[in-house]
Amino acid sequence: MRLIDKLLLEGISSTYFSGEQRLPVLDNISLHVQAGEFVTVLGPSGSGKSTILKTAAGLLKPDRGRVLIGGHETTGTPQLVGYMPQQDLLFPWKTLKQNAALPLLAAKSGTGEAYARVEEMLPVFGLESFADYYPFQLSGGMRQRAALLRTMLIESNLMLLDEPFASLDALTRENMQDWLLDIWGRFKRSVLFVTHSIDEAIYLSDRIYVISERPGKNALEQDIELPRPRTKSILASRNFATYKQVFINALAS
Amino acid sequence: MKKWASIKSNLPSALLIAGVLLLWELVTGAADLPEFILPAPSTIALSLAANFYLLIGHAGVTLTAVLGGLALAILVAMLLAIAMDRWKPLKQALYPLLVISQAIPIFALAPLMLIWFGVGLLPKVLIVALVCFFPLAVNLIEGFNQVDPEAINLMQTMQADRWMIMRSVQLPSALPYFFSGLKIAATYSVLGAIIGEWLGARAGLGIYMLRAMNSFRTSDVFASIIVVIILSLAFFKLVELSAWLVMPWKRKPKNSTED
Image 1 (cartoon, rainbow over the protein chains, first blue to last red):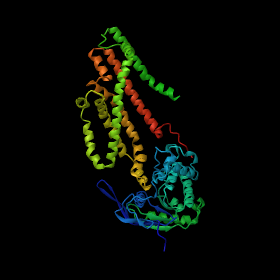
Image 2 (tube, each protein chain N blue to C red; image 1 turned 90 degrees about the vertical axis):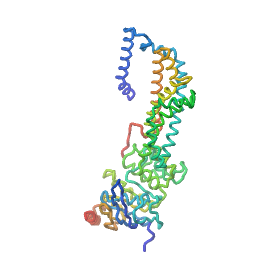
Image 3 (cartoon, helix red, strand yellow; image 1 turned 30 degrees about the horizontal axis):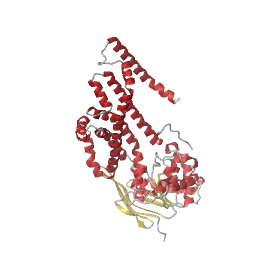
């Protein structure tokens, strides 16, 4: 028997309306994330992965199914979760420090206190000398780190990350993956991660759900038993290649 | 360097203006036109200098109406746009009326203002507010419409309250729209005040213009037109400057840092 899941999605079905058209997006999706676990949803573009995250956050109400966080039903009610949408969504009118402090200010911290907390965290995210920069003055990688810092400052043990590295070049992306694993190990959060990159999914996750093309259905649930902490050398290992073949097959069918 | 570039780019139009003025001066001299038909630029300049303090005084009165009206329009437009963003039925009910209200010519409304509120400052303030309100309100409403719903989602997952979402997402993202509305409003505002003064006032550039016209002091009319132009331009620049001050993230050049 396992402990109460941090996050549980049960039989989620969801429809997207665009004008007159009804577009089924999710069909009976179930998944769970246990405390401290790194779980990834892997699927092709347009398989409704973002809809899964938004439903998990309570931002969307599914047609059927329910969402439980820590054993409590939260379906369709926005929850305090570390949700990071696809674009970095740093507000252009706020400096890095002001952006990162938003979750603390929303939680009614004093401004001084919030900024002090952000300043304290900046070095961990490699952003110490950029506190007063506006987003347009930062590189893509720095913006993603700033957005992750903001997500990390949301007082929740559950993080929902929607393709956070999709917009980055390959090299920056690999650095950010290592860096995310490091942060995750340090702060012990439960993560539901979304990506369409097989390598990224295997490298990061404890468990992977493969979602089929629209409407998204559960296609495969696979544990990844690669030792942690992981380094890039495992990318060339046999186990990694075996997993990779499994996912290539699952996505092809 | 940058300053020199901007001087250089403005040089052609400055030369053109100088050329036209020169031609104007020569033609009025050569053709021996009566002054009340077309005064020479030099005569206008002399009128401007002779009546400088008088003009400043009248400009002050007009400026008060303009500032009052603009402030009132900003306040009402802001409150209305926020209310319409919050209660969609209100928006559905009021938006068409807003557009219809623009079809009413201000020349038709201005006399009513005077009948209801007399010849003092108040009717001018109201006329300016009426002219400025529409571009401000429409731009603000559009600005609130354009707010990224993902940004609001994000704030909800932080459990931010509505006031915080308004303050840190909706208002700042509507600011560029607000300022483009304000640019239009600022140029209309001086015009609105002048129209109000034409219909009846004790002081102001409009009434100065009217008096000069009625006594065929055409050079004085031109002088007051110049003051109106300067006033409008100054307002426009002031709006640009405040946009620059209020939105530091819109400032150029964009020097991005690579890692």
